[in-house]
Length: 281
Length: 290
Image (tube, rainbow over the protein chains, first blue to last red):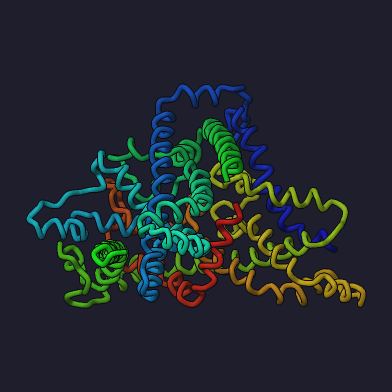
């Protein structure tokens, strides 16, 4: 009877976690077809991963966007939390905190949709503000050199408030005696922030960085919603590429090989990151 | 401290406070202005919705955007699908996760170590990395292009199981043991004693499942094909993304696009307002899990 209660969870994990890992590895060695015979082709799909220029382009984009997101959505929210912590009037503090958290609640379709509109040449608020100064409207989302900074910025806009809450909680947990002692020693606000708050937040910072790293290679939703053909060379990422090659062009073996490759990279990065954290905390 | 030192300290402090608050006001505005703008434009006329002015209030308030959204775009169908998937998926998730969590609180039974491993390891397998084989699995099960596929994905998660296990562990075992002695079935003990006592944990999981199901995107992109099975995010995406110049879909005006955004975030904001304290709690637990 006891086993019956955990059965649904076990069955689900077998069907949608364990078997897919095995299947994925298996498919990656085949010229996989939905209809008709699939033949084993050895390492041919993996060979193709390393030989294809398209793959390395999206790999580069993923690393650039991912790394920027990892760093920015850790340090900016930390700074934000320290700034919010200085606010003495708590209703105002809580209001800012709530407002900043709001975009995290929305899907990427909503956030992408809002920013596509904000940056649009007709009716978009950014171009309206530019118009006040007599500037001509710009179609921001099809500017190739603006694409990456824009995507990174919008990601920050969406996630900063959420990560900020983690840091605020950590700040609230710092021993107040540390600050009192520093006050007596004559340390000003800036010094107290630098020599007490920042070191005390190191642990939270590491957790946040680790979370960000694990998410970095998985970017999909934002790109799927905000991309367009003009900026595609700068922003198409690995998971988008896997989706297109695998499920729109049905090159399933190749897409599976890429997935296995990314999966292994993620595992290695996670293990390294965990180890680094353990030794440093 | 000499008096002039105190006064420079104070003025430095005052300058910091002013600068700090100015920056925070600007940041808050960068969140508020776009959201009010979206709301205002959703209530404009077609023509007004294209005007290049900073619109925080519709000049001629109109509901034409919402009319188009519900009549021509027929958003009610994706909205209904989304509600079905969200409610069914969330309820089943809470149910399965808490049952599994309950089992893992049991002291000693055959195969416990194996079950703990089987439930924990999937946390290391991100969905994005297995989309191809999961698609193949759904195809094998004949669930492609059905709402069942969307309910099934994430029907249980390691995080929720472990969270519930922690909640149950706070409940004294003697309670269950005496019930067991009285001849009660395991499921009865779980549903009558443990489940009601773990309400705070259940509320936390329910809220987070609700939000993530309501926003569920990648699975819908992968598994759903026919317009009658579209969920809200899929329908909204074709509404708000208009950059494909070759697109043959019917064009709608900005007011309808923004109305779509308003309609799809309304349930989220409602839940957020009602259950705000659980959100903060859940965020903390969510970060600790890793």
